[in-house]
Image (cartoon, rainbow, N blue to C red):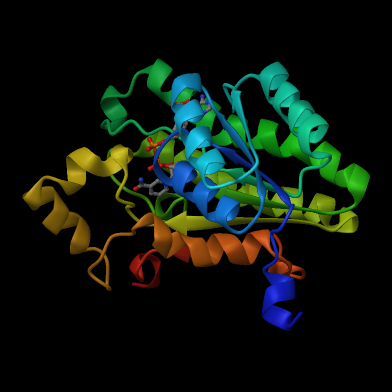
Length: 256
Ligand SMILES: NC(=O)c1ccc[n+]([C@@H]2O[C@H](COP(=O)([O-])OP(=O)(O)OC[C@H]3O[C@@H](n4cnc5c(N)ncnc54)[C@H](OP(=O)(O)O)[C@@H]3O)[C@@H](O)[C@H]2O)c1
């Protein structure tokens, strides 16, 4: 095998993707499955997970759909146990589950704040912790978290979201340093707007779309596939000496 085939080889690797019932998580799961990985699909909506699992199975992929709330430690631990029972080990964890409330800070409710931090930040920690324990045992692993450009720069009406995604940037560094001795690389990506359900309302409004685009030097928002290169880099052996980093995939927004 040449360098490229060897380095980007996901055949029979086990990849856990949180928030894979729809949107970016579903697309990430399909990409890894097409590359020969065993997929563990994890989010709350079991019906939608089944649909994605059927899609994967129909193309010959191996898949375990598992209904989980990433804010619940017991459920998250059960998820990682089941993943190991089914496929033997966890090679890659993609922390993708996330929520957003677009509310002025002065009007944000305590529930909206708590839910954002619980899903985006605590959920990322709990999943990393439970998968990390398994990776420590086998002395290898890759954790890739989906932060956001809003974890790197401030945005109006996104206080909780910015705080949670900025928290992921620092959590990524802390886990990277702590788990480096176990050959576990922990990295994150920071996308700009992605065309998914989360942004449908904003991106389908021509005025809001123009406003969004005006902040992006490349004058484009992300399609899920624009993120695959960065995700595959961090999930593969190509990043064996890269850890603790957050890579913007933002058409230059954070380069202004
Ligand atoms: N869309 C964007 O513009 C954009 C930009 C930058 C970063 N991101 C980040 O990219 C990630 C994916 O976003 P998306 O656009 O694909 O969002 P989406 O379409 O709204 O999907 C969110 C996913 O998260 C899952 N989820 C939410 N709460 C959960 C919980 N408590 N436990 C388990 N799963 C939960 C949902 O599944 P269930 O409902 O089945 O639980 C769903 O699969 C998020 O972290 C988001 O913050 C998005």
